Length: 446
Ligand code: ADP
Ligand code: ADP
Ligand code: MG
Image (cartoon, rainbow, N blue to C red):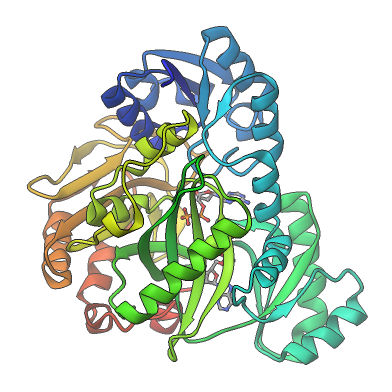
């Protein structure tokens, strides 16, 4: 086992990883930007190193500074968290070169699955059903011809997109040319890659994803699904496990498919296969996230398996001490993402000082966050400031527990979405479980 790990991230996920390390007796190195010198992850880690300025390109995406920090402190492994460098194949490969273990899959696998177009091709080869669409096309005339074949509405998606960004809905043929040009241009400036591909816009659909863990000895286990259909702007807002809409039959098929996909690419460590599931219970591969997922806690709650600890053990060459048949889904878990944003004003991000904080507690209530009273939320990073997670025997009970917990949560001084989350939980459609990714659009939120 490693004796020291550097965490190349910030916010709640850096704190989450530091906690796992502490419990495992591993010492921790935090890295931070000048804007984060008072951040909780810096305080909780055994050592901390400032790696640059506030902008992520100067700090949390600054590969040289992070690797130097690891070498200087003698860290044997780096956990990248999610977002930032977690799906950067160059970073994973450079870690290797520096003899530092990257806690995640190899750079080659990240490259293969991180390119969303390539990933779909790989899945087609492995006989995994994918969302119908086409490859990246650069020529606008050829693209239009292909679009007419796919049919409208369709989505133009950036090959290197992520985090709900780089996706554009085109409703009719007349809108195509303009949408295609703008989408390519936006992709180029946002992801330094103008490549876009198209997909049929499936609606109504559910976003259902399967959590995988793969050790270095060929063992692949699937920890069941997460329901992530409650989204704003293609970004997840509430997640649950299990999904209220997935029958045990469909679950078995999806697990089989996810395991097949992981084996086809020789996957290692934790990863997630995202599917779209339609009303006829047909499911289609959308993308694979080759990293820890934001919403991993709901899976931890229903399986009792600590995903972060297993990521670390896998990277340290420890084989699973359990098999697929030992994975039991117990009860129901829900997560609400607490974002510093105004849901009633186009989800505009908010920043500032938290003047009052009260975090809910009680049995099976978990709050993963990095904020504290008087903490200043800097304007440079993701608006997600915490995740409220509850667990109960049934879905109904879990919803009630979440409602009580949200009621108790007090965050003053900034705008956030906890009241909005309460409104959603109270909606009959949410309660029925029969909700789709277009729920908020239909409700009038963008
Ligand atoms: P999850 O399914 O785990 O929620 P997301 O796709 O929402 O995954 O991404 C997780 C985090 O990483 C988010 O904070 C998101 O903003 C960030 N992220 C992921 N991919 C990208 C990308 N290509 N560019 C910028 N941010 C990204
Ligand atoms: P990202 O890499 O940003 O997470 P995804 O490809 O996973 O992008 O898509 C994000 C969300 O956009 C999905 O969860 C889903 O709600 C919606 N979406 C993506 N592709 C389609 C599609 N073909 N039809 C309908 N909705 C889609
Ligand atoms: Mg996705």
